[in-house]
Image (cartoon, rainbow, N blue to C red; front, side, top):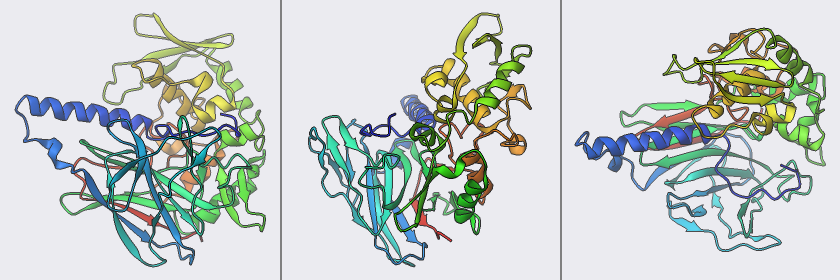
Length: 408
């Protein structure tokens, strides 16, 4: 995506794998009910659930919160503090200002509870200034701060992605697009217990920026600051490559070594953890890696990728929502970003022991994972391969939680 391309509303990249899981879970619930199984499990998830927002940031700035997304009926819109959904009005070309969907957030040291409806979308928060959302004829234009002309470029903000439906809630912290104002997420279960993730270690926020500055090869170019020098965020490496902040050749050496190795060695991909008998076998021939199944039939092929394809898990590593190419591509994408393809010919590598050990790797993802309290993060689109993502899920959520955490 060009940094100057209007960013219209889409299903979040990050939640794509889990949306598939939630759809499957919904189908399973429907099947059980139709067969006279558990008493209407679908009724366990109400139309809205509470979201507790706690401001532990230590900042005096006003906080503005937004709940945006796509309804189960496919309508794009926003929710107010009561959880009432409002469809966006028609947009224009050039884009027109969106209605003010902001909800006043809690002051520093305070908490506030709002309600969130069944949506697939995002919960944005910003400090000091409200975000500038616009509407085109194709939908919502989201902030795209890799574009220096984006009106949100100098605002400190971030977002979580969530899906709430009849099968429960999926809520995560995400760094797929950028690393910025820290926060953690949680869900309270019916038994009263709370599952949480996304919290940084003490000093972790500044530590990520320090690690990028110290890393040779242009990684410091991902950091964006205000004109006064205030650090706002680090762009994900995909946008670094697209904008020229990170060299396009940054992954070439590793990609070349992978291609050389699997010209003479077989790469075995077992993409489904619950189906270990399903395996695909990759070998390189020239510029292409061909994958065969157990019968020897070629099932899909990948051209030699570039940094853009690796960091974005797209283009030459496209991952359609199918049963073969997509799962293989997800596994390859994770192996390239984590640089495990040369230390383990059996993929995915289930343990994090070998992650990011090569000198050529996704140092952005490495810096973030190393500073997470539980080691989990969503630092690239398929960071959920092997369950290393910062995600909470519950089929009967009593309350969702977000904590806005300190920047120091």
